[in-house]
Length: 267
Image 1 (cartoon, rainbow, N blue to C red):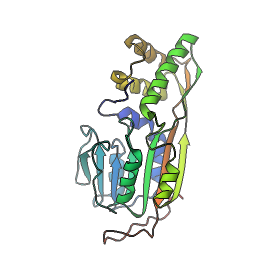
Image 2: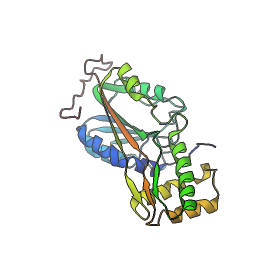
Image 3: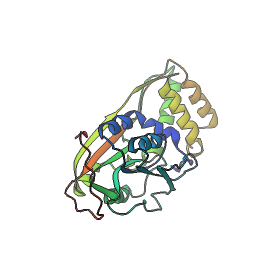
């Protein structure tokens, strides 16, 4: 089974929204700061609002057709599986990374690149889907339950890959080993009812990934889409995870620009 995903993965990014936005609220991102966003999407505009007209957001994605550059937003098409991330050491005040285009070949290397580009005192935010499998609480019948299970498991594998998560299964050890002395992990699940926004999102994800999902037929996919509108269906969502970690403030800076030290951030 291939896990190569189609180009723009907007539905997968929306899967991470419920847990990403609260973390951004805690970090007290300030005006005039420089941010790097890896896996850019609908939060790009919000980041631009937070840094203001004299700040800067570098928005990186493998497919930039859905992004529009502005005086604040610098759009750069890069795939971390092949390309280095933009920026010199100590370039960014904060970095937000969500990667919806399939699993990374070397997530530790990508994390290390981000840490190198983060200024002392800056926050690194990593969002992904955990290895915890989704649950089916209720289905109209056993056959429908089996189909839902098959589809959701294959989507889960496409999102998390053989390593079980985009940002490795043990990010804490990697972060601490690179001087990220403060880190916090938030995970979250929801119940999704047929006809509700969660099941509609899941149907959108399956439609988006359809060329890469090979363990069921087009007729099965159509049946699955119908089931996602059935109120008799009750599912447990994929478990989302957001890690935010802070670079130590006493790290040696390469640039001469003073280090950003946002106050009131969640610790």
